[in-house]
Length: 158
Image (cartoon, rainbow, N blue to C red; front, top):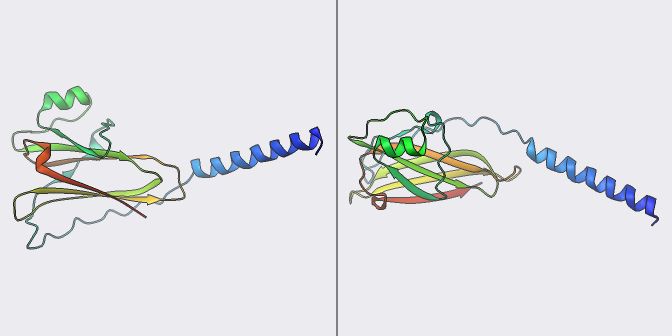
């Protein structure tokens, strides 16, 4: 292979790599339809909670763990632009992580079992055709004084 041929080869190889990276970087995902919360069964007493991820403008990163916020001062220190919440009877739970693939949807489920233990399950639905990305969920739940009172399960699904 001559020098000119090897240069052409590397230019072609670079172009192919750039095209593949562009394809992954511009991967468009369809807007997922919101899933209704699961119906509580006899073993899952109903617990009121709400997903407030879309109204908190900050990315509060807590890699596959729970951060519990119980007062406005702590929330404002973490995210000065966050809206005000009434923390007298509610807590804010922050869960986030990083996927090894693209993400189609992140679906939380929060319930209390018959032993009064809270369970937070996060199902991260991945898209193997897209580049890795982070995810986050912020949930308003009934007042909890300690994050260890919540059992966290994170499932990465395809």
